[in-house]
Length: 264
Image (cartoon, rainbow, N blue to C red; front, top):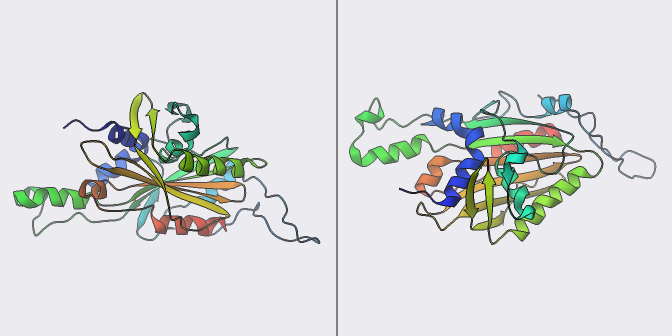
């Protein structure tokens, strides 16, 4: 079956960071730069910009997200120069789905959180033992797990606010869809819509981008970008099993909660 251009773009946007996780699926330290309201006039001082070393301590680590395995991003996050759109204002949305921090960060780092889930057996010892009528369902269930890429990025000056605003503006201005490209793979999203965010941090925006016109039906991707002072946390979640079964899914709440706790 020929896949839709949006489906190919969805795949291109995440394949380099999620491929191994999908195949295997078939600390308490706070930043020294955290702002405070201390001061004689009650004004909040400018937040420091966390260094690369500090971001490594602040991002979620192994054992810190119940029900998930946390580790390096397999294959790495794509180079930002390889993720483009003819509509420059929509690039921040596409970047988020690829795990790329928006704007011009001073430092950044990423992790992958893969939901722990056992493959169904249906009373058989392997998929070969399943009846034909249940094989497809078993495959879908085996891939029904959330894979979330988390990217932390720090910014100088008001860079974090401007970068976050660029994402919010892109979600609003690109609601009717846009064309994009990653590493030569072109595609079309037909719809971008804001969703309810987890409400963490100083400002947050959650959204989904979908291709509704392809032969595969709607293929949604979900992301959320949250500002914590001079740091942005970008989350993008893919659940291939849910996509195949047309089952709703969202950005992994447990991952957002765990990461937000380390940034408070």
